[in-house]
Length: 438
Ligand code: C2E
Ligand code: CA
Ligand code: CA
Image (cartoon, rainbow, N blue to C red):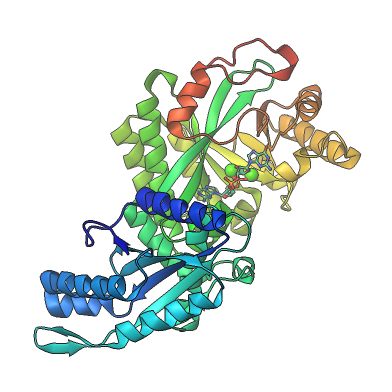
């Protein structure tokens, strides 16, 4: 049995994945299966509080030793930090061996550990996954075991073995909320930036900041899922402040290449005084001019609380910040009302933009929106532009700005700079022109 040299130093994710990857390759070649168990020690906090750090380490060491002794030599045991241990079960002939290993581990753990003269009995919650005949990446197998662990916690079961239906059910929202709260503390969120270009000149006129979360437990989580979890749990305020601060910081780091940045504002935070305070603060400490920040607010969010929202929108607009109506076309704005809003941009929802080339009624809608917006002196941004035909149609319709995979997917901040410098995008109508940065 192999064991990490320093069992109590938490294994780095890359090392864990590399080691698991090697096992997967060997097992696949030999026609065997690989199992992964994620073990979570119940009441771990209580043990730490009661016995202190040194004793807890001693206890963990003892637990690791028992696992190492009991499992076959070729298996691998990793301490993942906190209350978590990961076990790779190698060379399984049949799936049932996974159950046998789990039973064995439960038995070992049932034996009390003596700490400070007290005999301590602990419990484990186990999430398990096992390979099928087809190859699987180590991070996916680990993700499945993590997913099974969450399910076990949720259903208060000792063990859950991953099965694909778990993915369909989605992550239990409460679990997601608590992980997201941790994630904000652990700095697991990052912002990516998607360029917007002037449809006629090809110039990059700004970027939209989009949040990404790579959870240490769940792997990548879809933005719409975690934004919804944030909105439902009241975490959206913290998330938004984090995003704005990050945008302002990025703006200052980009220096000469800086372009205006748009940030999404959920309905729940539009009227938050704390947000307004923090926003001023972020702009001032990073030296970002308010005109370089744009706030995207969905049409529906504004319509939900018109009178109240209007005041907040005025506040932002008076500061010099640009406001954009997002996802336009999906809500029910009254035109009269729209005229009164202090917004300067209107973003046509991507559902109308994606099939422009093939859908005549989408073309009619988009043309109507563009003309109406121009009557109100609003700039029109089309989002979700994926092909050249769509781009050309939008240009013919008089659209001002485009954003979408045709131009670029959302980019990590360091790649954005490179993308700008290396001229990775040329507008279709005039290939060869540099999409220069302002
Ligand atoms: P959104 O504001 O409508 O953002 C545009 C979404 O369209 C992004 O999805 C973007 O990646 C995607 N997209 C861009 N170009 C294309 C394209 O050509 N084709 C297709 N099919 N999609 C394209 P993403 O990043 O998954 O974000 C989803 C939603 O999550 C966003 O929709 C926004 O409502 C929300 N969101 C993301 N980050 C934040 C944030 O920091 N705060 C808040 N409040 N919401 C956020
Ligand atoms: Ca948006
Ligand atoms: Ca949108």
